[in-house]
Structures are given as C-alpha cells and as structure tokens.
Image 1: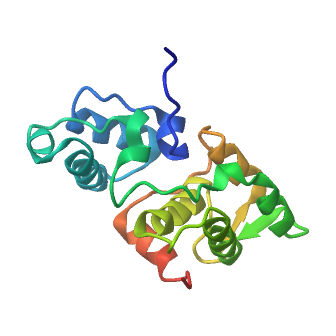
Image 2 (image 1 turned 120 degrees about the vertical axis):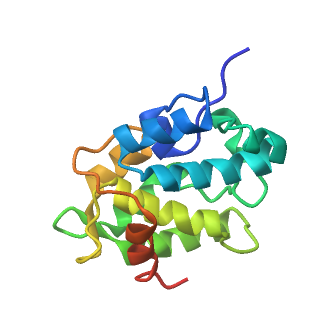
Length: 175
C-alpha cells in the first residue's frame, strides 16, 4: 500500500518529524520560520480534532497524511489543483497580488462546491503568501515562488510565519 501524500504545501516542504508535538513544532520553527508557540498551538488543535483530546494532551504530533480528515481544518479548495488560475492572475512583472490569491480562493471554493470558505482556507491563503516570500506591505509575491511553494518546496526568501504576520496579511484580505 502506498503512502498518502501530505496535502499541506508548507508541511510537505519541511516534512517535520511526528515523533512528538514538541519536536514537530521545533522543526517547523527551525526549518520553516513558523513560531514555536504557533506550531504547538496549531499542532495541538489539529491533533485534538484528528485523534482526540487525550492524544493532544499527551503531546502526540499531527498525522500529516490524514490532514484531509480533520473537522474544521480540512478543506477541498486547494490552490495546488488549479495552477492555471495563478498564471492567469499574474502581473506583467511576474508577481501575483494577495487580493488575487483571495479571489482565486473564492473561485476554487465555488468550483469545489464549498458552502463557504472556512477559516483553514483563509489561513492557507495567508500561509501561501508568507511562505512564498510575499511582502505584506506591497501585497505582492513572485508567482514563481508561489508555484514552488505549492509544489511542496521551500522558498529561499520565505518570511516569518507568526500570529502577528498572519494577522497583518489577514487584515488586508476581504472575504
């Protein structure tokens, strides 16, 4: 039986250990510039919803191959299934705007027949923007970096991913 794919581009890029929640968050901090507190809290929430509260309290890491089975976090409106939409939205200078990522997310959600864009989908949009080296001040990110990130490959100029940076990006989005 073949191993399932890691659907989250960020987790696919860094493939953190799943030996414990602490190690999971520590590796994402070292490799992916995700704040350790953010990694612990997000990981805890995923484990709680995925495997139960007891496993989360015991420090179990998320099952990276079953992220599509997590109530409230799973979503089918994934950017990587629609690369042509990214190409169509690119500016002449080879960048894509955060507003365009939001618009594309809305289109994908409609095509995937999502009743609404859930919070995880909104977070995914900000994570892709920052993980691809997007500049929150200009609202732009290189398209090549977005495609590289969505393919599950680290981007050299990735920014820090913290609650603060995600909020800054989220505040610029109109859902």
